[in-house]
Image (cartoon, rainbow, N blue to C red):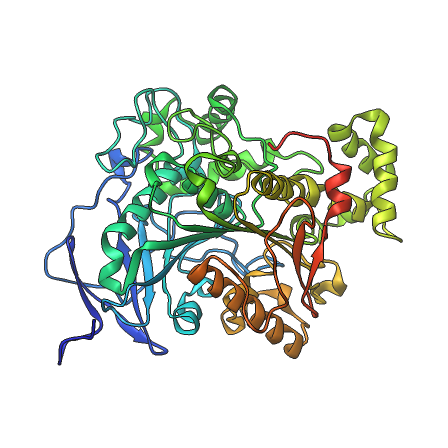
Length: 525
């Protein structure tokens, strides 16, 4: 529907109130739009609540605060930082990018950031929806949600309030956890109710996320309170190999956290300023760290209330069976967290064999080590360890999900990102997160990221062009194929077609077959 003559294209009227956005690069942007009540004071560690709305014109031209998190001045050596001030508990807002706030009913892309459940922000420059909105004629939504102890601490039976909300965003009786998930459910319901005012189609929503955000995406896709809200999902590097705790196991972690924070219970924790809570989370990092494992001080909890099983399981049947799924990983995921660590670089064959024994048993460990050596000729013990962690946490669980969906006839497309970065003498390879600037095709927004140093601009830009448009095609149609991409067939149990994104883009059969066979048989989760 065209705009009435003289109408301000940067103003929208919502049930909650009136918003004024801004035009950036020809795209209309609305920033820091509240989708739930601020989770502060007595609402800390309670399910997301509806926002009360506002009177008058609300300015939506400046990003809101990011969720509280640890912050390293100067950034980290890989991403250069994954969240920057200001931080505040009043963070339940989202950003919207649209070609026009009209009645065009464009496909909608909802982006959920990752960050190991402890970092990140939906308003990071690299997650700008501008390129998708402009190149794909899409409406893009990126959300902030509670992370770290404020989003993932499990308070135990009854302490999470558990009274729920009319829109289905709360926990049930018995005290649910996963406050991050109640935030994201509230955001999806906000999209359903409001996105048409921004020119989006509430019946054509794709939810995409990377790493921890991909776990969120899967949890949402299989959730009973999102039925009919999600048509497609894109799962980028989901760490589905994580062993998610049940309430009893998580309460041990909660007790350790309370001790670190110097509080006897949740009531005392509610009196502490959030910087103290984040600081105590840093102590939990140290307590939960194990050699050869990705550190995860906070995790989703399978509480039986807000989350009844591992998020990957829900994508294998039920209401999520008909959702279109794209899933992929990077070739050397684990290099992100380990390859620049001198201690891991100096790992011995004996250390790595012992780590392999954790998974395969001591009798099989030497044979598995030899199999990894054969798969990567000339590999050092550290390389074997990186490939093992990548397989356990990312590649093999993703393959099992693809296999399971293919066996049941549910649509699924698989890819592997293979382009290595020359940064740090090539030690990072095709590391975790490296595909992100290619997917968004906005390298100017990633200038702070050391892991992109040295990439050949022609190769970089050519691959970004192909990937970005494959994502657009999938969001629009459920099929990632486009004229500049080799034919990408759905994954099936006969050919196991997997798209290989590298300097030359190729569709290969059973690209990760060696990993798949080495880790078979094994349960999905």
